[in-house]
Each structure stands twice: as structure tokens, then as C-alpha cells.
Image (cartoon, rainbow, N blue to C red; front, side):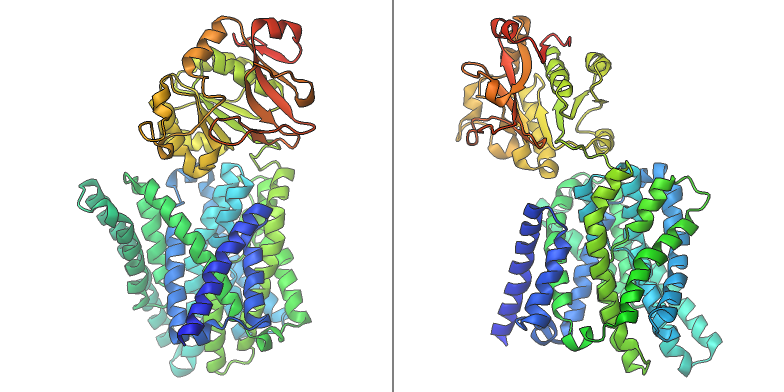
Length: 609
């Protein structure tokens, strides 16, 4: 028994994380590899049998993991986003959901050949779009904020509603034969009010309790994350005692309320929970897929495959177009949101519970619920995962550039010239400063600018519209540069944040200097501090973008290697030498005599083009 559990944990955790890493390297949706891994180690090879390994507690463990996932999803919902997307979000949650339910039920009955009871359960399950799939896709696709808000809010809000709707439908199907219609409806309405009300009060109340305790320093730092996880599980488990799946509302409400109370320190805790959720999602997809039976999968038929296609191409697009009729959504947004609707963990978990319960109650076709839902999950993950980015770019709903974007913090004369040189060479660049006058020259030259304190919430909104891939902190204040790099490192990656070299060499000392964890990588050869760049600016040095093969770099600082595919490489003493390849270009800093000999494609350090 112990050996079986150990093998299961190895397959689930080790294999799930390996699939995530491989997917990141291949730049494909991780869910695709996770589903494939689950099928391989479960139904195909038979290495993993989650129900046998973990016994009857498996479903309870899955429920607790899902609670943490939806709690972390709630933390991503900022009410400020509703200012631009509120009307569309309301239509996607309040109007599209019931239309999806009706159309999904009709499709299951008319196309899939299911009886009305199982058809209604199928329609209820598939009103959800999984945040476990949507949120990772949004991070990679870099949608413009409004479209991303539509998909994010719909997925996170509809998940608990869909689970509860499924529970209500099952309760009606199973409970009606034993009670009168009026008695059954009254009982369901009371349980729904009790469960949803208790879940909302408990979730929101827990958020205010956390805010009160954290702001008064009543919880030690080492206990803050465990406290949040414990409260999220309580907000999930307690309402479930009143109504099945009501706990998802409690966990979601806890996350949303906590995100909008702006409690100091939540950002750091959120990053830990994001990592935890990646692990949980990896494990959940492997477990749920590996737990499928080949006999169940053998029940897939042409009507079920036709139902899967109808769900993708008819049900959701029609529901979204009807719900957003005469709204402020553009036709591009309606087309995009109508197509993108991958299902995820909650749909799989609910289907795994609903199918057996219907079968036990004697409903013919109840055993078709789970394989049909999994067919839809696989189809939507593949179709929407691989088309989200290209479709967003085709509809001009993506803010991602063809080349990697660099954000430069601090608008001085020389950094303005740097931004102009990169902009003229076709490299996406964003110049950031708090003083509008400092940004004027770059703005006149066509360089995108952002007037904001980069450490403020206002700057977060601005960066969401123009998300950078790399950051260069180039202000006069060396410690501020380090602080900015430390703040942006979790989002961009620690290897993608750079700062100017400090004026004092000892600050880079491995033992006595500023810790590498608390600053960015040093740009250039280690001698390019703010003062030296300002002095070279006064002497007339120029930035110049040249072809890699034609550049003479002996004694000339190279600040950037621009790849033929739009990638950026920054020379730094803290990693290996970057060797330019054919087709690459170099950003050089040339002295006046060198610049006079090669005047083409250069920009003066004074900021004039």
C-alpha cells in the first residue's frame, strides 16, 4: 500500500512539474502535456490508479485542492478592472451563463442523444470556463486589459456558480421522486440561500479579519501564508456542510475581497500561492485524467464527438453573441470571447462526482457524463490553447509585440537617446518617469512613455497595457534601481531585470555588497554607472545600432544584442559572454570620433534623432 502511494505521488508531482517545465520550454499550453501524461501513466500503462492508491479520501483531497485554486484565482480579480469591462463582465456572468446552460442541455439531448436528466447535468457542468486553464494562457498571450478582464472574470466567477448549478440539477433529479415538487423546490431554495449566503459572509468576513490582523501586526510573517491557506480551506469546507459545492463561493469570495482590501504584503504572499497553485493544477490534471477507465473512454461515440464539436462551434459562440447583443463589446471582442472558453479542473472534478451519482440513482446515460465532459475539456484545451495567441493578434486584441519589449525606468537625456535609438531600430521600448517634462523629448520622437511611479498601483495598470519583457533601471539613485528590479523580478524573471552599475565597486562584492537577491543584473561591463554615462553624453558620445558582422566593437561598449527573431540579450559581467550570430544587430555606445565615421542609423546622446 505504501509503495503504491509513493509511486502515485512520484508520478503525480514529479511528472506534473516536469510537464510544466517542458511546456514552458516548448511554449505550448501545459495542460496539453498534463492531460497526455495522465492518460499515459493511467489508462494506457496502468502505473497510476488514484482511486485505488488514495481510497475514498481522493475526492475530498481534490475538493480541497480546487478550493485553493479558486482562492488564488479570486486574488487576481481587481475591482478597478470593472471600470472598463464591468458591463461586459455582467453580461458574461449573469446572461451568458443561463443561455449556455439551456443551449448545452439542448445540444446534449438533440445531438448527444442523452436523456433530459443527464443532458441538464451536462449543460450545467459546461457553463464554466476554467481559470486553471485561462489564467496561464492569459499570462503568455498578453492580451489587452479589457479582453483579458472579460475572460478572467467570467472564468473565476462562473466556476463556483456552475458547480452549484450542477448540484441543484442533481438534487432536483434525485430528490423529486421522493418529495412533492413544491416541497423539493422550497428545500432547494432554502439550502441555496443558506449555503451561498453563509459562503459569502464567511469569505468576505475572513478577508476583513485578515486585513485587520495583518495591519496591526498580530500575525508573525512566518504564519501569514499558512493563515491564509487555512482560512481559504475553512471558507470552502464550512459552507459545504450546508450545501454541496457552496464552499467554492466562499473560497472565491475570500480571494476577491482580500485582493481589493489592498493589505500590505499580500503581493509577496500571492506569488507563493501562484507557485503552489501551479503545483496543485499539475497534480489535479494528472490525477483526474489518470483516474479515467478505458472502459469508460470506450463509450465515446460519434454522437458524443458531435456534441463536443457543437459545444465548441455552436453552444458557446451562440451564447456569447446573444448575451452581448447591443452591448459595448466590439465585434472583435465578441468573436474572441465567443471562441475562447476552455474547460478545466472544476468541470472535470464535478463531472467525476455527478456521473456516478446519476448512475447510482438509476439514470440511464449517467455514465456518459464523465467521458463526454473530458472529451470537451481535451478539445477546448487543444483548440483554444493553441489559437488564443494567434487569434488575439489577428483581431488586434493583443499588446504583445513581435519583438521583446524593454522598459527603461528613468528619463534622463542619455536614457532618452537610448530609447530613441532602440525605437528607430524597431525595438519596442517603454520609457518611464514620474516627471512629464523628462518624457517630452521621447514622446515627441514617438517613443511610448508612462508617467508614473513604477512602484505604485497606477504603474501596474500602465504596464498591463504595455507589458515589458525586460527592464532596465536607469535612474541616478542606485538603491532605487535595486528596489525596482527586486519588485519586477517575480513578474519578469530575475534574469530579465537590469540596472546600471553602482558607482562604488564594493556594492557588487559577493560578501559585503548588495545581495544579488535584492538587485538586478549589472548592465554592460560593470563600469557604466549613471555618472559615467552622463559624462559621455556631455562629450557627445552616440548610441548606434549596427549589423553584428559589420560592427567594430573593440573598445566600444556594447549594451544590447538584438536577435534576428526580436529577442534581446544584455551583456553583463554576471553571466557568460553573448556571441552574436548571423542576422543579429548590436547597440553600441560610440565616442564622437567613431560616430563621425559611421553616422548612419545612429542617435545622438543629446536625444535628437
